Image 1 (cartoon, rainbow, N blue to C red):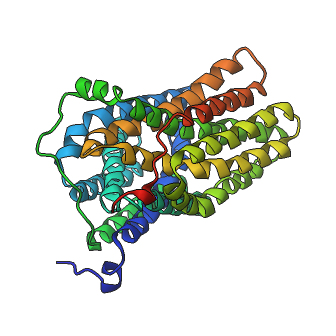
Image 2: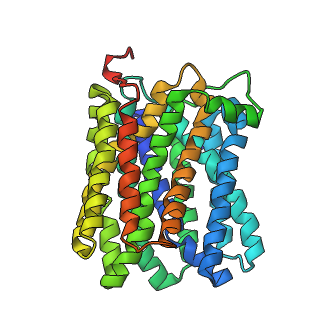
Image 3: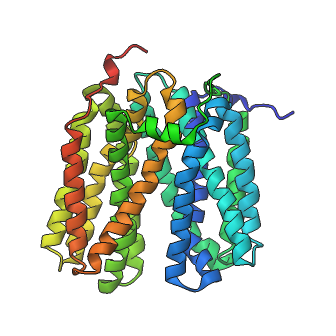
Length: 396
């Protein structure tokens, strides 16, 4: 039997989880960054690539609700290990797949497994955090994740240059295997289970959206991925109209810098002063920057600088919108509803891609910034109506 290294075993549980998630995010940064190219190698059509992604988003949305009984009744540690085993095998097989329909089946399985992994790991972070330190711990995890995502994105260049596109999946498979061994060596809480499982998917769906605070939390978290659609989809397309392609890489690296350095301190601050001001300012900053970009649309460097500056606001939101959900959950509600809450990520992606695309059918490109500006402005107003929970005043 493998023995646990002493140095790793003595670390705080949240530090060990952060270390595991750091490596996992590198792996998933590798795969997510090249997935569009990989799919295009089968279908040779941008439209079909988009449709394929839409299918996986819809599948993930449904899966987050379907897995609720599994998440409630299972040991989160063992569930994480099993999901990582499937991920290792799945990404390894990607290297050899030569048929689109085989890929579609394999990718569907991996998409479902990913919803299990995301939910299980998120709940492990929750279960290994004290009530007074949850927002701080979430900020720590997200800061590490953004750093490792940047590293993973940079690793793609030498991998593709020297070994080809498919080598990225072999590298990701190896890194996930390493992460699985690290979590095996850790000594963390396995997470709580519920004896009574809520297996009715429709009932879970209705119950989740009955609570007004949960709905607000859901909308605010979807606002984060809504904004990232501007940064990762629409702005790169605008940049290559004005500048050489390498500027896209510079820009995408730059927008992660505020997240890497600010999410952890902002998480600590939110626990002390409450979420309401953080969410209001966090959405107001990108709203102002986007509206200014609409006004000064002809200056590409002003737009790039504005969106990078807007990441300061996103650093107030990305981890805190997740910890807010946990803070408003009563008893074991987080076990039942966390997976459902995660569908907000998919809804935000869909809204951030579909609504601007619809606008672009009738109006010039600059109106994309008006869409995101008004959208985040409305979210900042919504933030003023939430509970101003202060974790520092809670009992441990």
